[in-house]
Length: 198
Image (cartoon, rainbow, N blue to C red; front, side, top):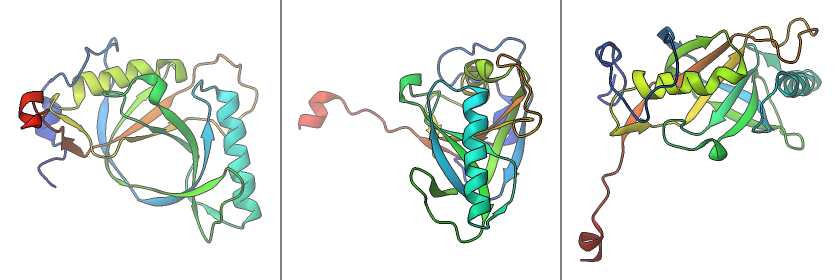
C-alpha cells in the first residue's frame, strides 16, 4: 500500500476534508476491493431518477445481449467528479454495465475500463435523494485531510433492486451503495502571484 492510500489508522481519525458533513447519524463505512473490469457505459442526465437509471441499464443489457457479451455483475452508475472539490453542476453521471467479451461501441454507448482496487463502501437506505448527504459524510468526515484529493475522481454506485421488480413507486426509497476509490494524491500548493511572476 502506498503512502497516499487510506489506511485503517486514517479511518479511525475524524478529520475534516472540506465543508462540514451534512449527514445525520453517520453511515457505516467499510473497505472493499473491486476488480478492474470493462464496461458498457452511457451518459445520464444530472437529475437522476430511478426510471432513467432503469431505462439506461435496460439499454446496456440489450446491447450486451446483442453483442453476446457476458454480464459479470449488476449494473452500476458512475459519478465523474469529486464531491469534496467540485460543485454539483460539474458532476457527470453515466450508467455502467460490467461485461466480458469483445464489446464494440454503439451510438452513445461506449466501452470503458472501470478501475478496481481498494474502495470505501457505504450504503444509504434513503435513495438517490440522500446521495449528497452521504457524500458529505464521506468527504467531510471520513476521508483524511484537506490537503489531499481523490487521485481517481470516479465514484461508483449500485442501486439495490434496480433490475428487480418494476412496480416501484417513483418516489420509493431504495438502498444505494457508494464506492469511493481509496487512493488519494496531494493537492498542488498554490504559488503566490509575486513568486510566480519572478
